[in-house]
Length: 275
Image (cartoon, rainbow, N blue to C red; front, side, top):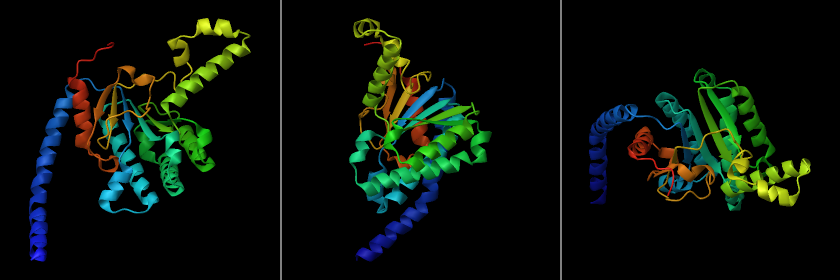
């Protein structure tokens, strides 16, 4: 008796699928109208979470296939952001903590990102949309092929100025702050400033000047996919006034509706800069 029930379920899903697609399309249009009426976040940070969870749910086995699917989602984010007028997007791809994962998984992530960077560097659509690609993080943690691909993408898009897409790869918030303090102390040491003098000179602004991308404005909105509700070290310094949105959908299957909802949530909040 199980087979007929399964067949009936399949038939029902096939029959109702067009209806649900129409409902989603109508909802998405209405949502977009609402979002376009209000100011957009200038800088959106996204924690790309849920690749492995989606793989388990969909039966995917090979790490390279799992992360290639996640890398492909970057095209959607680029298109959605450019269309809406979001000027900066920072995507957290890989942290130093991720080095504890199995080698095959790490290789899958690095391989997918490298292939995507090489493809974007040669993509004429990227240049027509004015996309500037850059990267932050500890490059000494990355394989040479990936570093070369990141450098090539940065060089190929350096003159584009419509939207900046930053890959945080080999990136950790604590590591960024430690690197900034180290660079600041080295600068003062080169100037002959003593330790006691340096202690009196340290300030938040001095440290900020030595962050990976010191000139980039802090993210207005940070989105995390997969339903997890923590930052895990993403942009610790810069997120002090960011609005947070936790999206209960895995990164590879994030929809435009999910992105619009996150922006609408940001727009509805009364931003306070303090306790």
